[in-house]
Length: 347
Image (tube, rainbow, N blue to C red; front, side, top):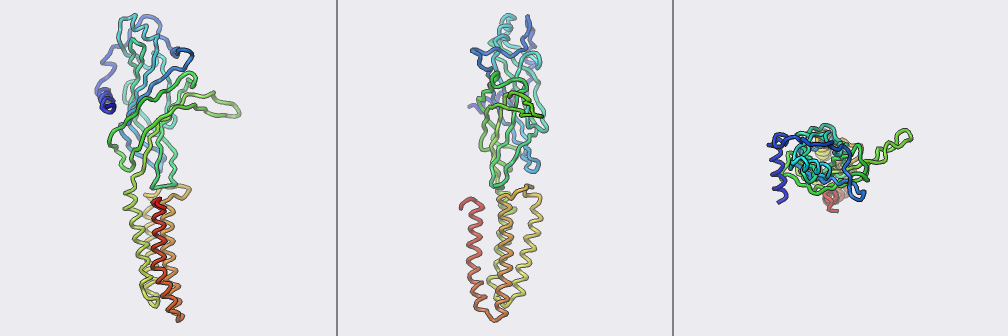
């Protein structure tokens, strides 16, 4: 029910202009520009709701993601309610800069734009509502050690440039999202948010601030792996298994064995070059990197086994060469099966 109500209100915002729907506030008396007083010295509560319209793109190479979302924020300012009642107005619209509002900036934005007028809907009970659409890219730090079986957190970090946690408290009420997204390489597993205190730290030995309000909206995503299964995992397994053909060729046929081993080595090296636009560029080895280099090692060991058995056969030790081939027929597949189980986190 919440999804339908929230989506309906968002669509209404998209097709209607709040300024056109309501008249600007014409109030008698001075409009307060200071933070609303809260009872018993408590911080002013800002109630936030966010709807994720679209996860447009997740760009691993650039360490950024692109989203399209709507948010609504509401707080109480009883002083404005008193002014509206005196003027006999139920509700009206005020522009940014005419009243106090929490000045929030997005800390990790790279390229962002808004899609709605920056106005506030004020009611005679003192409730102030702000709604906005944010579209753009945001930076983050990916942990790709488990690639392509990784899960990531895509955060949007808001901070206040003028209020401390003792003055303003952000209360995250609800979040929802569309059923499908433009980005098909990732699946959204959950959304949460939390408030904290943000410090700019120390610059040249002096504290920059005593701390501002921080609000983190986090999208938890899991990588869809079938693309990498068909493009990387299956071809690698096939190359490795073809290299085992040398174990069934008589050791006396050294030329054929070395030809197969050399061909598989070259095929695997060419395949690795083709993966440059698929695998992420990191200064550490990912799970996929380890699987790729392990596959290369298996092909290389099969090539060495073929040379060893061929040399033993040339020295008249054909029975020993055949025994080594027989052991390799079982040892290599079983060991590689263990590697596959490790890759899929079964072991």
